[in-house]
Length: 175
Image 1 (cartoon, helix red, strand yellow):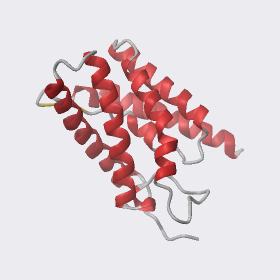
Image 2: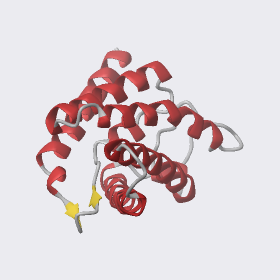
Image 3: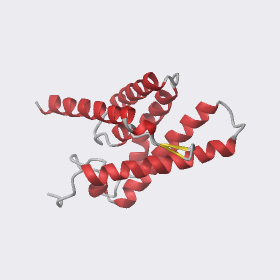
């Protein structure tokens, strides 16, 4: 029964992140330079034990949902799939000395500030770089594109950190 429960929880998270992003967050723009891609929280906060094939399918599904709502022709899907593909490598690079426990989750309270910030910033900047370079289609306006990448990555990272601090449980000590 635990497997079915996990699937239902992840399905609920998918709908929640996509719905909140489409209905509320998509309207927030900073200085016509920064956008918050809140839906990345769904992909970044997946359980550590999620198989890569499932991560890629979920990344494609979330990106496709965003492409359908924003008529972006595959930009979100391509960048999200890249994030889903690179995530296991980043997790492998950031593996603690003792390894991950079976119950570990991507949680700032459980993994620590330094681990979480490196993990989140690496993946968010990579996603945003892919998204905005694909959106522009060239390096003609490199300064503007770099500004969009940096401001949007900062905006998204702060929003995801706030979500972590508000809605994810505080560590109660290791059993």
